[in-house]
Length: 257
Image (tube, rainbow, N blue to C red):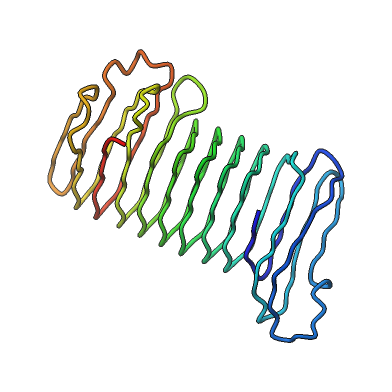
């Protein structure tokens, strides 16, 4: 996990009293400042706490290596980029502002990622439940799987590409934005059935020629467009993914991979 930050708070509950490794590449306005006194690491009641309180005009990168077996993981910072890689645990709570969040190769039961004025990227990851929230920035979900997904942004686009559910039954995806487009790329592997309800105002719903195993229905009203795309024989699939895609003042594109 790489956290690019000025001030940071990390809480990770672990199954053992394992060491935390911290690599720093920092620049301080005052060269003679003792960096160590601004970083605190402690293990208490099954939790590892990492906190920083750097002075003004400090910038750089902190790379924190955590134990492999994580229960709950919380990271909170501001005006900083967060990159989380190859982590596995029960619950993730990642919060920043004015900084990008990247989650790569991670597995969680519950995932909560929040920022503003920047983008959230999730790739090669999975979570039974995921809540993704930003503003003035886009959301990109690539090669990932969810059983329940809520993604929301404003003034940003949402891209859903190479996706699936984890378990059999019905998975629910909510994609919601304003003043931003939504693009859904249907995977070539049709091991899951898809039911997409798309709605926009002051925009178009673009559905290029899909394979013949989809049923497409359109409805256009005043100042509003609606469409549904449903896999043929939808009820026969063990995995069913229900997608609600809603935007305003922009378009929705649904296409094959």
